Image 1: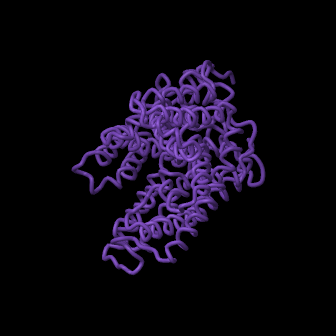
Image 2: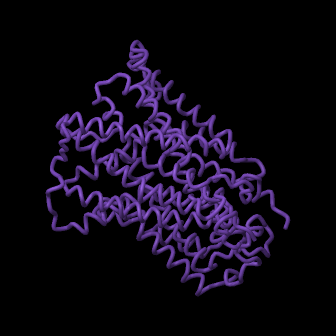
Length: 487
């Protein structure tokens, strides 16, 4: 079949080389768990006034939910070998796929900038430790909200990440293979060291391991759902990585070891860090850079800051740059490659001034909160279409065809059934997520929107099937447990 230049380039094509084995997939979750933003969120769970065992049970529930979502989207990527924007063409249409892709890409670009800005704090700590006189640059005149030192540190992180992304997915794989594992070991050592410094006494303020709570089940479910939502954006484009897996075992064991197993080691690390820091300082510390400074060891602070910088390189590129690079390439494959998409995404993240986004509760809660809430319905439509309607049978060649007779062309390239179902889900998830009156139910926003969109898509397709009812022209590839999926 002739591939349309409006839909095809070598980066969007089915994966030709598959080198992401179990360790590489596990390393994705190493990097995604052990980073500054997730440490801050998880530390907060231990300080909300519920027993520690409930927090641990809730985190484990969240990890299991994340594992299930990663398996669903990961199987799509492994069997078909395509990234998210191409996978979305199955349900949304060859041009309609830009709707979920751009929403995911928009959220990712914003968070890419914010994570880069947060990581630049670790760079500042390292610079001031090595060059104390640089403190004058931090107090100088601010330009667009950043001091000269702030700009230098931000642009340093920005440039290093772009340099890695410019070398493609293989360079990204090699970077994150080291990043997550190294920082995991260091954080566990830091947790043990601070616990010993606190005399092996852990304090959680109003919470604690001996307290009981009449709403134990509710607390566990709520913490679990919140933990899952932290990774919901990552799950949507998880096929971007499993498309490079050589066999099913690679992503199955990678997800299993990286989430339920490694995730509980992460939870234990946060448990020790939070309890020890509260015991040592009398206040709740939730940022890893603050944990480092409790050691009173300049060398450890310097090495720790350096490792946080390294870890951010892994997680930020994996979670927030790969997706928009593919999403932007999908807009105009003839002109935008993965590398050019990464460059565009990096440029946009500077233009939006992420330090101002991060400082604005309105931007975080309403703008980024709304974008995040939109992703659940997109996930619901894609998964329902692939598993319930098509039974994992996809004509991969047709995903790159702009022929009006193609099975994924629908009406001028758009499947309005999928788009309407997603919009109905969004009409539920976004208000639940951002409207203050629904704050008590905001933790259910992703699930409600996802379920409604999935059910709506199946119902609309069954009621008004159109071309969707026709079986794909080629069967699904045979699942090869030991080698690359074929067929």
